[in-house]
Image (tube, rainbow, N blue to C red; front, side, top):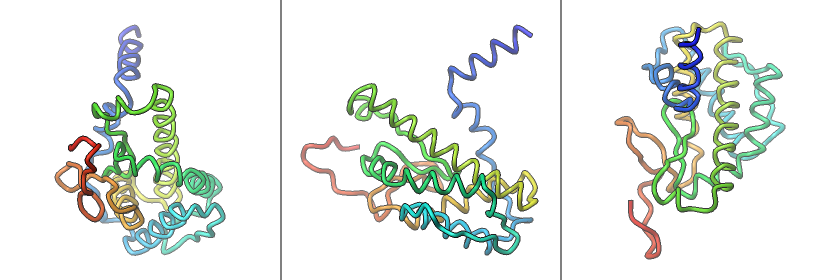
Length: 195
């Protein structure tokens, strides 16, 4: 029992990302997923979020269920914070990952940027966004009666839809797992350090 408590504390201190990585880095399995319907739903959700549309009427489509209160609320909340997240993406200190989540790039420049309170706010923004995304992904999987192995396919489909609405110069994870930029790498300004 004591060992379980120690492992739980170490996992909490190490951060969810190191523990979750093993569960979220699976290859997407599209075999039982109605791909066209999922792509349409993901594109509609991501457009509504990017536009800040809190009242988007998104319907179930082709076996993909999104008309639940939990999913609707997660979409509304994401739309409400879209402007803040987009502004944070524009700083270049956050990127969209292929697993459908957003993550802070903890570089030396980021650690020098702003105050500790600012970084705490940014962390809360990212954690809240990821929680709402999980609600959507898991909700779609469960309500659409899709097997657990389809979760990675749902995450990847939403990631791909999100790339279509992101701003030029914003960062994302490419197929090799490294940073890439929407529309190509932006020019470095004279007063900014190069990456």
